[in-house]
Image (cartoon, rainbow, N blue to C red; front, side, top):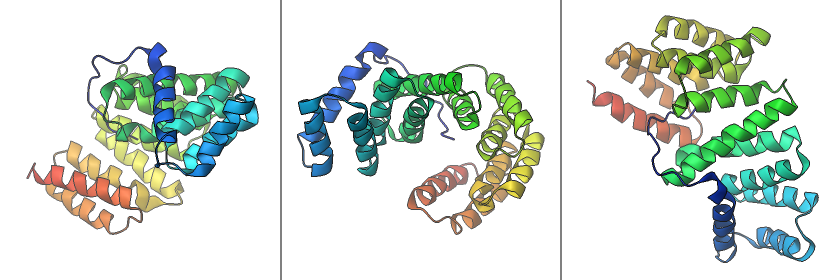
Length: 250
């Protein structure tokens, strides 16, 4: 889940999205920041048109190159042409995963609306996609796109169908913290850690429950212990930044 409290102002019009994406893609293609394989795929599209196989190749190539925003963009283009649920879901998930890293508020807001729209289309085409439902609820909650209780109720529906769905349990626990139901959040966390293959990964929820209860000393100690268990540098960086925030409360 991406925690965000910023209210977006002066967001770019949604109809400017495609033009902006094309401009950003072309700027990268004209630079030395992407390898020749990505450029070769775009040259093939220029020569042969945006066929299904080339659009998919572009989406995969941009993902491998570390540009999830453009992977999402090309999956979105596939969705617009072929309207398959997997393309809409991959578009939404790519946007969802990198929203936190986007600083420009106009681009961020447009990406947010496109992510939500992509998840909605994926759900319409495949109502069994619980991840799409959970991610959509997370975005609506994290970016204040409606009352928090709406996300809570949607997540409860998902968990009624699959009580062990990890993404939904994670987001549900965070939603409960947001609305101040820390006791229920603790219960949800216990269940999540009991069914998860990576229980240490969700431990930050326990720390956030402490923070919500203003038990800052316990939160700080728990976060410091948690950092030692994390494997990837992004999670470590995020946890250390949170530790600094909590230290200011002491």
